Amino acid sequence: MDHGTRLLDFIRQEILHGRAVPLDEELDLLNAGIVDSLGILRLVSFIEEQFGVQVPDEDVVFENFQSVRAMTAYITQRKAAA
Image (cartoon, rainbow, N blue to C red):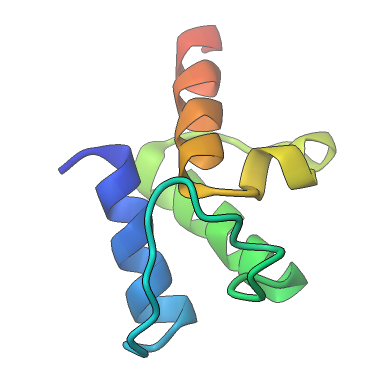
């Protein structure tokens, strides 16, 4: 399973709790009200645990968590830099 699919599954199960909300990798999760500040913290924890990527505080910014595509790009970048 790729990073995007794993992130989408996590958001559906853990943040939306199974509610039927149309999601795709491009959706602006923050402006759509799907992810809030607590949701970002949960996503940071998920990314660190599932993908083995440390997310420093300075990287917890809108641009990195705006969409699943942005998070996937961030994960790929952090893995390449390690």
